[in-house]
Each structure stands twice: as structure tokens, then as C-alpha cells.
Length: 91
Image 1: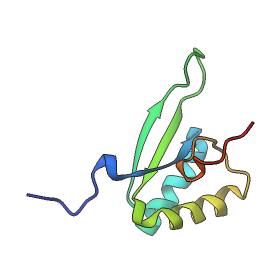
Image 2 (image 1 turned 120 degrees about the vertical axis):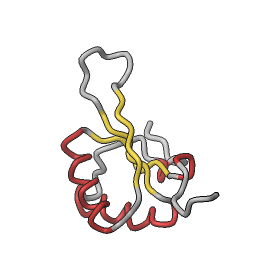
Image 3 (image 1 turned 60 degrees about the horizontal axis):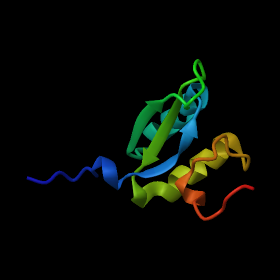
Image 4 (image 1 turned 30 degrees about the horizontal axis):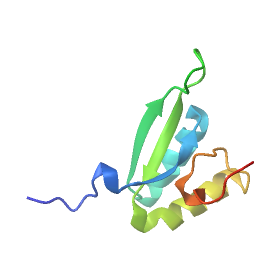
């Protein structure tokens, strides 16, 4: 039996966010019905560093998710781990 819901591996990484920013973004994604997955992680090797949230979205609605991200945070994205910008590396 197959589910219509995308599998975890089918989701596209939108970015990594501090908890306060993740909360805002997740609320908006939920409002618009965009399926998402989250994963909490602690940056290595900094003990005591704040936990960040990786947020992934369904690929078919990634452009909508990116627009929501821009509306919330402007052009200065609060993350640098976004798969939307994999080909552009900051030097």
C-alpha cells in the first residue's frame, strides 16, 4: 500500500533555523498547508551551542516555501545551509 504523503527522503531542505525563527516559519507553512519535516540538531563541536532546526518541505511547493521565508526574513536569510543555494558558495 502506498501513501500519497511524500516520504522523508523526498523532502527538500529549506534551511537550518534557530528555534525562534523556526517557530515563525513552521506556523506559516502549516497555515498554507505545505508539508514539512523537522530535525533538531546541535552544531558540532560547540558544546552548549543553541540547537538549530533543519526544516525540509515538499519539493512541489518549495517555491511557495521560499516565498514565505523571504516574507518572514527578507533577503537576508537567517540560514546558510539551504539546498536552494547549493551551487552558490560564500567565500
